[in-house]
Length: 443
Ligand code: SAH
Ligand code: SF4
Ligand code: F3S
Image (cartoon, rainbow, N blue to C red):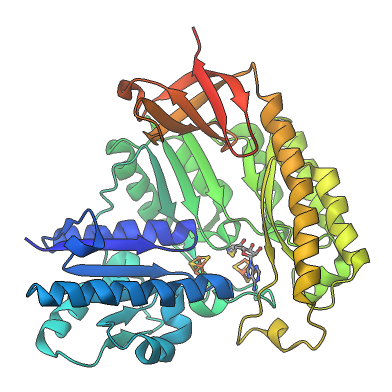
């Protein structure tokens, strides 16, 4: 029996894609290996978003080649494949810098892995590289999603038409595509039948979703959420990542109407300076963004916000940066991700002359993160003594520990019997740090 090992870099969409690739391989008779050295097929699902992410792929590939060599000495063949966003952007680099790679295929063509593997069997030698933006949808070719986790991802939208000037995603994932409503609902039902209590709808720009219903009418994300909320057994719904300018009133209303929709939204603002937002080609000002947040709070006063931030975008002044801190102080995010601007070849911002010095980027990132973490810690501390429903999705660090998440996506660890795994349990929060909570069963 053949074994596979998949290593996933990057965002939740890549996690979802890796699960689907595992499904393809299981259909071909492969089983999951515990470690790369036990695998006949090693796949890297890669991320190209920042320079560090892409460079990590190449350095880790070097290590995998050593494993391939060791296995060769034991008389074992190893196929190495690279999929994901690095392939779409750097197919030539892969052939040059990692010639030992046997195949490479972009995020939109991994449904072709069975044909690719057959081709490799026939023609040893040059890597098989497929970076097509195909006319067909990969979703029409994938086997049924057999993921069995209680907390599942479901891709409903892929690609991006926004072309923020710093971002590679429109080039790596292509133009926006929305899966038909019926197809999404069928996959959600399957996931729930397999034990999912929570489904997180994914898309690079998920709230631009406009999938067709059976009559061929385009439907927005709000329609899809209302359809999915009707599935018996499904307890929790989330969606990520949203674009501020696409937060329509019908979608905001869902946060009032749907009990299953969790009171947490990741809505990246990137910067608080209107001048920088314009240079980033974002279609919102900071005032537009704050208005959306206010409407969300009106729809559900309990909602907690999260965001992504970029510091040191070309031309960012101290004043621009202060405007970002100002937005943080207004919104009081309960969680956030912040990055130094990374210059990505092929994007418009990479060509701008007024790049910000590394030292300044680092200083600003430190200041921003201190502020973000202070709000996150404050929110987590305010949870102490409260009782929250926690979905325990995996084993925790310690032997008798389980790991779960609150409605606010807070990480929570509890000393609990494994019978509580894959259940939603009322937990009283006893301790809180910046990145995690500890709690005990209530009652
Ligand atoms: N689809 C997601 C974006 C994925 S990238 C969305 O639209 O939110 C995740 C985050 O990475 C972005 O929100 C942005 O904050 C950051 N990012 C993207 N390109 C970057 C770059 N060139 N340098 C630094 N951070 C970047
Ligand atoms: Fe990238 Fe902007 Fe699209 Fe998000 S909205 S994926 S940051 S181009
Ligand atoms: Fe990375 Fe591609 Fe996701 S570049 S962040 S894996 S869409």
